[in-house]
Amino acid sequence: MRYIKKFENILNPEIGDFVIVKIHPNRKRGMDKDIKMFNMVTKLESNVGEIVGIPGKVFDVKFDCLPCDKIDYNEVSDLSRIPNNVKRFGLDEILYLSKDKEELQDKLNAIKFNI
Image (cartoon, rainbow, N blue to C red; front, side, top):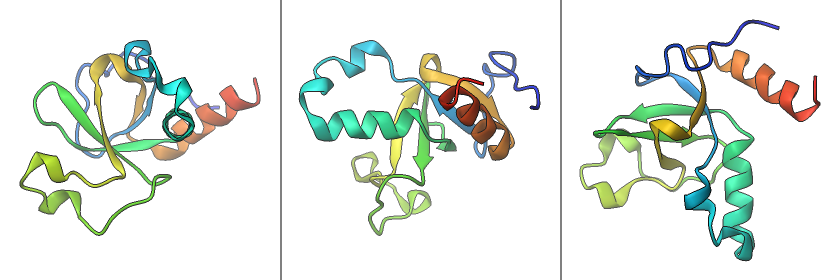
């Protein structure tokens, strides 16, 4: 397996980088009671996302595993109209960062199968 840089270049994520996120426990509070939210959190933490925008100190991450509406992220001018498959995360919620999606998918498989 290839070496994945953990926390080395994480201070400078760029648009187009791929990430694995771990949602902060404060944001998870109460989600276990809502099965839809719990399933979404599980999907987000077990899939690779791509950074599509950096508005300030947060990162807009696009996930292919989530259903998407017809809005394209690059055409959004009003922040309240962000597409369904784009979620916002802070720097502390980015667990792994890489330019190569396959590296992160290998990492997820290693975590999943305890390799």
